[in-house]
Image (tube, rainbow over all chains, first blue to last red; front, side):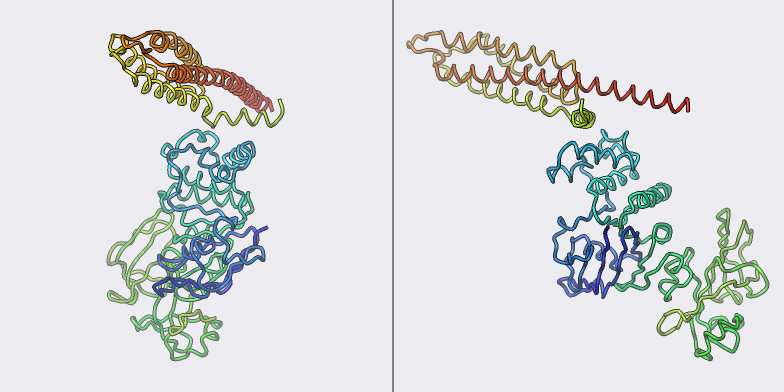
Length: 358
Length: 168
């Protein structure tokens, strides 16, 4: 049982730079929360405040209803996994995993049982007598996780644990973390700037920018119904195409390509009733674009990915707004080709507030 | 064997034999103390014979051999038990060579080449060093035997497991 609650948390450094603004989050027992955002958005600072490695300037942090805002890191019963593993090079894997318990002067036999159990979970049993430099990056990260597991903490904190790994290993280790979460049913807070990690791992995602929480929701919510332009452009790969467009009756006219008219559905028209004659931001995900009669595009680049093809070009003729379309299959367009695109789904945002229009 | 004992044995798979290793290092330290002390009172150049050369060379060999044995016993090599016992026996035998001879030799000045106090001190150092070496050897032998038996049991268990899996 480990419920975490962050209430109105601010982080202001000594030089008056504020890194986190009014952070609020309730983490349920056994939930895996991913904090995602670009570098410098305050996600690692938030995690470090939860761990007790940074002071909380304002607000309160509760663990199972108990205020731990002022509790030292060592007494918070949380384990942190770092990007650089932080393993002791002169110790074996067994000794590394047992180290924190040895410091607590636990019974060696109990330590042994816990280390073997953690090694079994992580598939490290055959590596226990090796030194960290004899292991691959993925295995070292598993050791770092094992070191956390043996402590049986209330909350696991991960600070970009996969950033040092190559793409293939990152995928494999990501799946291992997910399995670990399902097996341990532990409360986890995970920081990453990689949206793929966020979407695949999280029960809920906290999307941050410039120290502010932009949206909290399930991966599907953030992908399907982004709260604002930042979330819309940050979540999704390739990122969403965004265009300034004027609402004119039952269609949108792109500001940078007046010849391009995008028809609105009756529901969309109703939603945009208050925006008639005004400029909004039209968002279209690359995967929501198909080839078909509609908007003309001049192809500038073509990236075949096997299952899909990313087609880049300008809509409304050369010099028009840039667009990326993710078309199914192997498409052989070349530079200068003229293609017609159909939009399957639109996202609408208020240009001034940047919030989604619903 | 109860569970506690089983776990204690199993721990040996992942932990060094620190007790034997540390006892051996202590024996080396005691020998160094012996070595730096024995020539302190070189009245009438008593020690200036071929013996001093042999003594120095032996001390170097002893330290090297003991250190190698220490590394061996640290990782549960049973074979290093016997060199440790031999080194311990030689430490005892050394009492009857230089210290005993110096203690029983009267110099031209009428004084003993080695006084009672220094003799006692050196004998204690050599005996302590020998005890440490023999104790390290005995501990190593017992632990290695236990570990071998444990490993054999684990192998049998895993073989039985594989067999039952195959038959299933």
